[in-house]
Structures are given as structure tokens and as C-alpha cells.
Length: 64
Image 1 (cartoon, rainbow, N blue to C red):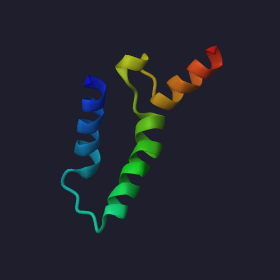
Image 2 (cartoon, helix red, strand yellow):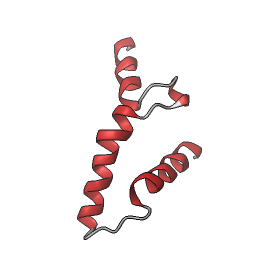
Image 3 (spheres, rainbow, N blue to C red):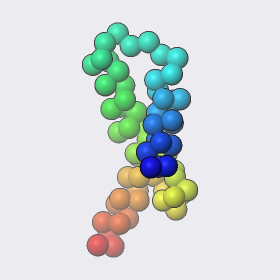
């Protein structure tokens, strides 16, 4: 799936690559923070009409 591959490439480039983590839990918390505080609320996607995933979901909820 191209969308999943794009997401994981972005995640690795912006969060994981070049960083050292003290533990698996540290890595997990970093990824969770990235997804919930940056990627979903702020990152605009051309496939979503240049909306963030959170805004797209909110807009879809208003229509349904």
C-alpha cells in the first residue's frame, strides 16, 4: 500500500533515523507523540485535499 509505505518512510525520516533511544518504551513514546501531536493534527496531505488527518476526519464526521 503506497499510503502506508509513505507514512513509514516519513516516520523513519522525521523521528527514528539518526536518534538513539534508551529503551523500546522510549521509542514507543516518541512515535506516539509524533503521530498524535504532529502527524495527525498538523501534517497536510494532498490525498486528503491538503487537510491534516484530524481535520479531514472532523470534516467527514460533519457530513455523515
